[in-house]
Image (cartoon, rainbow, N blue to C red):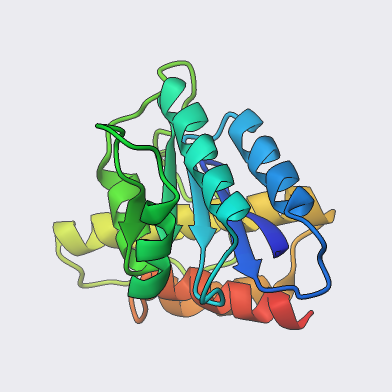
Length: 205
């Protein structure tokens, strides 16, 4: 299994899985899942859109990661899992009354659940700042309703945090990342679509 690790938001540890016939074992997957479980982030997303099948070892590693994350109040979310792969994962899961894997159809659904769940870690401050954290976006448009202003501020705040996270891991902001986030801030695309576009862009570079 080939794994690409992304840290797009401070509260998300994102892994993108891809088949790798040359990999003799699931050591890389085990390593990345272990890092994710130790990261302290409240959510670990695993994007499975490129994976049609996986080994029994890989499936058991995902189940073990879910158990480890649940013990500390965090969550493993498997995104864009095909019906066939979902059945395969459940076949290799624990018997009895163990909680099922958390599967979502899209990154949008994962993002929505992330923002609607109460904070699992009271010692971590994920509250919104009162001012926009990034000057890379246009000012608040005129003529918006209060609800639209709050939604715009939320999008700008989220995009600013993505840029800050990217700059911290890459040593500086990437102008292309800012460009890809502009439609999200304007409300033209969803957060899940923005993340998907960023993943596609980063896969090409």
